[in-house]
Each structure stands twice: as structure tokens, then as C-alpha cells.
Image 1 (cartoon, rainbow, N blue to C red):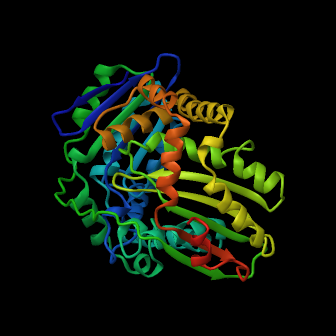
Image 2 (tube, helix red, strand yellow):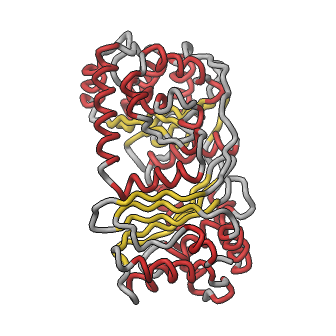
Length: 417
């Protein structure tokens, strides 16, 4: 079990020793993300994450890249709706360098105007690429429709006009307003000396922002309908509902229901809709959770004519009482779910990320035995509770492509009554 220690600089340190590897994964996970933005600075959390690598008072952007590559390391970052992370993977003897670089970008980033203008262009290209990718865009439009006029529904990349005009003071200001050691977890996994790591993190992180803003509006799932008629070969469709948050009693049951329904080639959706009827090339279900909400959806790529048959069959599958599921289906779902959790533990990067996010979300690290016990305890009755919780919530539809044959929102909704 990893060790957790609150340091004098306010950071929570998690150390996870793995003596069978020659590498170490380190990083800072921060409970700040896109949901902390407002309508006027949408995209700033993601832009800030990009700018962190574009130079500090001590290193230029090129020097950061060269120093990482000189030791054969990998550095990256990501922004989600609720968490931002900056992390590295290096050989075990390069722990000092990795901690020094992460501490530098989080405390001494210069936010140089020329670098900001260059990175602004990069992100605008990223937005353009995503706008040209309907199987990605359909997810963002679904989220925006499900959570209208609130941070939880806005694109993490941000709006083009905001990114074009945002100033360095707004980027640095977001960091200074929201970043705070009390929201930070420094996570280390791999082969290291724990005493050395504690000393390094205590020494290096003494100039972090002390932001006091906790702006994070409560998410409000509403549901709705988004349709964009576009000349494409396929209709990209998401049919979804409200899911569950991280703390729900139905968290594991919902995940398992999604696995039985639409995860893998043996799933019900794949067998019934692709294998038996040939209506789609791709179909899958997913369950995603947040601290105060969650979503459940089914994605499909289908033809303009095939969608006439797809929608009734898809709704029929969601209407099936789980008492008709076989014991083998539940057994397979549990095996898939457990293997995805346990196989990830073979990667120090996954371990570092998992430990940090659990600490930020649950204020503790959940051991594998506890998770396996909860998964094993799920019954078909639990899956039925999860299914009803899903289909009795407001329906959200997002569709992009040749959609003339897609039934109306009300007509589809009536199939669940």
C-alpha cells in the first residue's frame, strides 16, 4: 500500500515503492480543471497547462526539452474537467532532475508573451483539428447539451475567440487564483529512496501559488438534443443519460452494466447490432463519473439508412431487464473490469496517476482488495438498479452527419416509457 505524508509546504506526498523496475514516475496532480473556468475564460486551464513548458525564470522552453531528453525521460501534462497534472517518467537515478523540472514549471513559469502567441496558435490548430473530426466533436456537443450554460458542459480546449484574445495576465492569474498546495498531490511510483524523495519535495516546492478561489459551480445535468446535418459518410451518434458520481452506491454496478452492454466483441450491443444485423462498424457504451455528477452513453457510427433500424434496436437493448442476463455475462464483465484495473498496476505511470487522483477525489487511496470485493459483490439485481437509474433520467442526443432519418427526440424518448 502506498504511503501518504503531508509535508510542511502543504503538499500531500504519495510514495509507492516498486522494486522490480528501473524507472520512476513522478508528477503533481492538482484539483483544478475546466470546471473552475467561467464563460469568459473557457480554455484557460488547458492553455495554462501548455504554457508551463514554455519557459521559466531558470530555463527556456528548449532547455526544458533538452534536459528531459538528455536523461531519456518523458514529460507530459493533461487537463480534465476536475484535475490538471504535470508528470515525468525517468530512470531511477534521475529523480532529482525530474522533481527539479516539475517544481520549476509550477513555480517559476515566465508566461512569455511571444511563447503565449505561439502556443495560442498551436491550440487554435488543435481546436480546428477537433472541429474537423466528427467522432470527437460529437462527444463535446453531447456534453454541452447535457450540461448547458455551465463549466461542466464547455469544451476543455476552449472557445476560439477566447483563445485568440486571452492575455498572459489572465493565464498567470488563473494559476495564482486557483493553484494551492492544499489542492496538490505529488505522486511518486517506482524504484526510489523514500527519504530522498521526501527531502526533495520539501526542499523544491516552497514558492507555489497560494490561490484562494474555490469557484466551481455545481453541475446540473439537464439533457437535450443536438443535431448537425453534415455531408459525411456516417452518422456519428451518442445516445446518453445521466450517470452516477464517484461516491454513488451504484458506481460499480453502473460500470459493470456498461461493460455487459457495450464493452468488447462479446457485449450485447456489439453482438446484436454489428454482428447479427451489420448496422454499424463501431458501437460501444461508456460510464464516466465526476465528483457531483456522471454520464452514461452509447456511441455508434452508422449509415444514413441504417439509423432507421439502429435506433429501435438500440433502445430495445436498453429496455431489457437484467434478470435475462446470463451468469456468464456478469462473470465476463467482472473479469474485464478487474483486469483493466489490475493490469494498469504494472505501469508506474498508471500507479502514480491512480494514487494521486484517488487521494484528490476520495481523500484516501483505495486498495485493490477493497475494489475487487466491491466488484465481486455486484449482482444482476444491482445491474437492474443501475439500468433503471440510467434510462429514467433525461435523455441527451448528439448527432453529426447525414441525419435526415434520425427519429425526433420525443419519438426516441417514448421508446423508454
